Length: 143
Image (tube, rainbow, N blue to C red; front, side, top):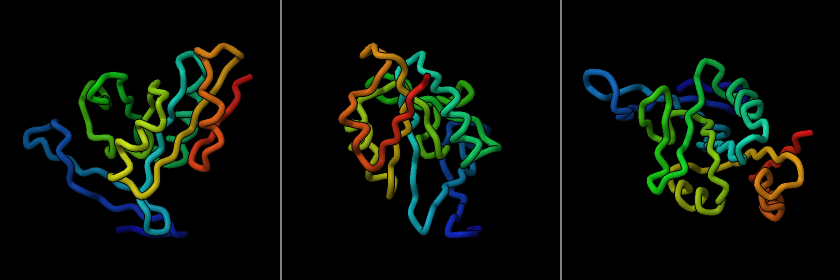
């Protein structure tokens, strides 16, 4: 475990389904002793790639982000492999039901945050504004 300025990282074993044994080492990031995960959850075509790259640069500059599919299993993919959601700190998705994501993954992390990019006035490119009022949701306007 490595710690600096209240931010620590530890390495855990996880079965990522790759390699000969299927076991990989996964870094888990903690801040002040709490694990956290960030979902970059935005509608398509809202410049969400910029937000995702910004988050990856801040928290995991040597990793690629994972993408959660909008399917009943909430499959998370990284480089054409199915991976556990905690294989990265940031997971990009177009799933906009933030409450369902929060309830589904709350037991795995001490804190869950959402970063959303909105664009224009169409309901298809915007999140429900009431969700932006939660303390763990950051809504960014693309202009």
